[in-house]
Length: 264
Image 1: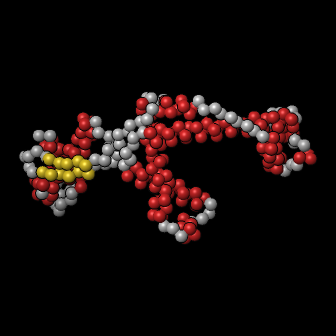
Image 2: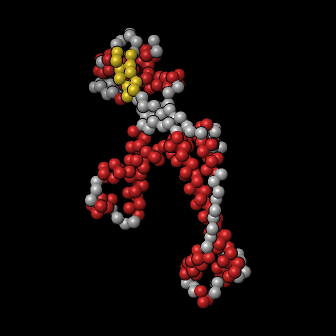
Image 3: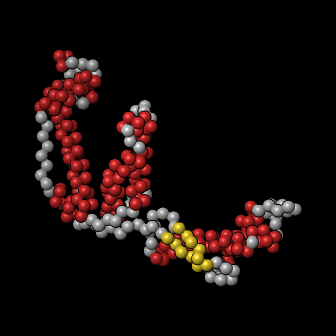
């Protein structure tokens, strides 16, 4: 009964696409359309339309989270009979997260020691002078003092030290975040579909090719120089790609657990 509801829609599509001698496009009678494509041809079109509408409803009813389009096999199709079919769907993996709050707390409690040496400050100061074409004998140029909003060289060196310290703190924070996520991934259960890894490898390869192109080289030249094929590179990068996928999945799962969503 459900399938029969799609007969008119299937005929409408056929009328718009089938041209027969003696009839204008879109004005071929139904009987001639059915004779042209055959009853089973029309039934197949009806089945495709019905399945297209039924698929999202099946996913919702069965609480299935697919990661790709399904492979559909029609196992039984005949006029005035129920349509039988099989769907093969690769589903999103079930992720068992480790206690990420415990791991984060442990890592964040680790003592942070940040030191900026006089040598580092001096090197940074020399680099600033070099960028404006000045030397240490000239003293701190006025435009540099204004840029850093300071009155003299002593204040400038102090400002440079503060900025170096902030940069080290930022780097340390990034390292902690990475270490936390590493531990979460290590302690979590995450079966990874091969499709995810292949997609990540493709992304990595595209980025790499872009980087080489921006440096004025071709990817083919690079492969020739290192005496490797693209497939060999993908094979070498597979472990890194899998790790990246696990990072993404862990973050997505944490966002789900914590109900983190972007505001409007």
